[in-house]
Image (tube, rainbow, N blue to C red; front, side):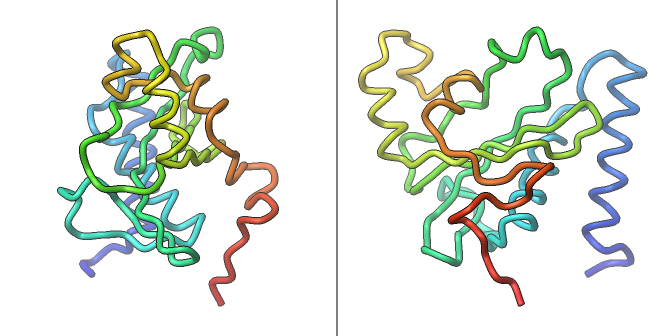
Length: 164
C-alpha cells in the first residue's frame, strides 16, 4: 500500500465529491461507485476482486456469491422515487447485486441486495424497454431486494459476518 491507507483516501474522496457538487452543482463523475465499492466491501466483509471485467466487483466470503456493486447518491428527497441505478451487466456472470445508497456527503445510508434470479424475473416480466436492458429505479430495486445494512442499525439480522 502507498503512503495513505484506503480508509483515509476514501474519506478525502467523500469530502472532495461533496465539495465539488456543492461548488459546481453536479456530481463528480465516477467517484460514487468507487466509494460505494469500498463501503460495501468494508461494511459487509466482502472480498474485492482485481479483474472486474468478469462483471462482478466482490465475492461474499460467507456464501461465495459474486457481487456486482452499484451506487446511487441521493441529493433531493423529492426525486428519490425516480432515481435510477446504473445498468446491470445481464450478459456477464454474477450472482447478486448490491446497491449502496449514499447521502449528499457520500456517506452510506443503506445497502440493499437482490439476487440474480429475482432481477432476471423482473426484467423478463417488465414491459418497459429500460428494464429489459437492466436499468432499474432505486425504488424498484428496493422492492426486489433485501435490506442488508443501515446506518442506524448496521448489519441486518441474518447477514452478520464475523470478521474476527
